[in-house]
Image (cartoon, rainbow, N blue to C red):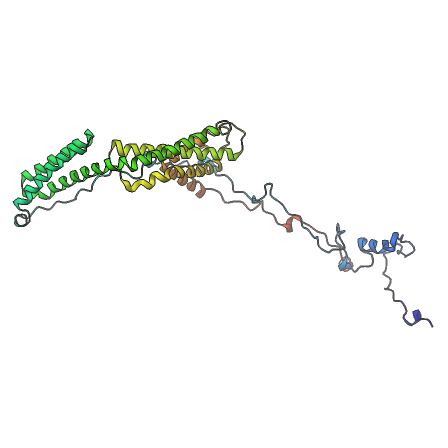
Length: 377
């Protein structure tokens, strides 16, 4: 007996074939070159494999049971979400005014037109306390202070409107004193205001010749630089069909120009006209031009996204409207504040993004599993 007889070759049991079909024999298989044709065809056709190991329909990749790469829905623009939020309609902010009252104020670091609070109730003076606290010497010194304040107005105040108001205060102080020493507090209040205003005029002359001139040339340098940038973008920034970065840069330039104009206007107003310039507001004049450029950037984003809801989303054919609004935002910062409030109101009424456009790989990829013989039975 040979070695082959000791270890007889085992063959799998023959599978029953449906009636009407002939079994496939090794002689019917056509081997390809290298002797691997039969094995490859068995893997591709599933012959000789258990039902649960049968390859899925459409799978020809090394006999894998699941697809190696699933089909995914990719956005048209890389980095963009599959579901985009709908642009709110223009009616979303129809009840909100375009600009508030503060947007029409003149540019400046603060409002200098505020008046001193008036006492709600003036209690009558006690004659005994008045005689004890207000002496004849105090009355005479207050009268001299009023005379000194008048001389200070003549010397340091060069604006007729301001001088006329100060002269009226001095007149009121003297009338209070002549009415009786019971009115000493009211008279002193008028004299104190005149003295403070004269002292401010003295400081103003000093500040206008030092920090005022420096701020003027600082704004001048910014103005010249921004005008040059505006001229460089003149050929591209005002024609249609340009790239967004051209419009964005030009919008920032016009926001900076508005900041320079607003700072100049405020500087001249508070030094030359109202004569109430305060050195503590120097920082406001320093950051206004670069702040105007940043506000122009924000205005461009708000207008291009359609959140301003002026006429719905803007299709830039002529970007002059955005440039003008950026100039207004740099000139008066309250305009930008109103735009932000309006955008927030539009977002509050905006519809939520729908999830119907979002799909996963389980819904886009469908596979067909082969039917087991037991299922057929």
